[in-house]
Length: 114
Image (cartoon, rainbow, N blue to C red; front, top):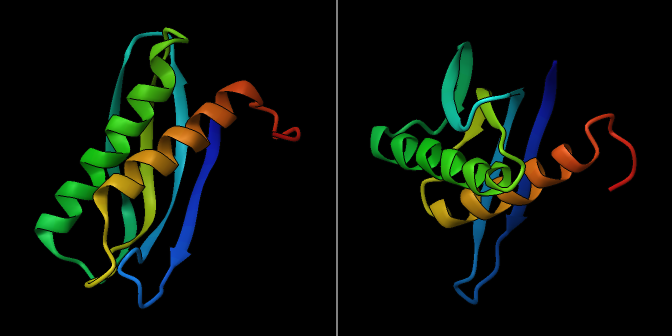
């Protein structure tokens, strides 16, 4: 069963802690460990940059792996929309926010309150 995985966090301030972290994906849990992250066939990548794209997809994979490790599960994540902000791109935020969202989805896959 594919679950919607939506990550959106924007913090833009003059203090230097700014980040824009946003993507939409589908998450399909698998009974075997490991996470595959791929762009969907018709994926939309805003402000594409090859290096940023590589870093974002790797961060999403690491975050999901962390969240699923204790459950003994794996996943296939198909990214359908990805925002890569040219200034406020922070890979560690993609990792952290993915970890949180995937953990919440595993805890409440039906979408009940988290």
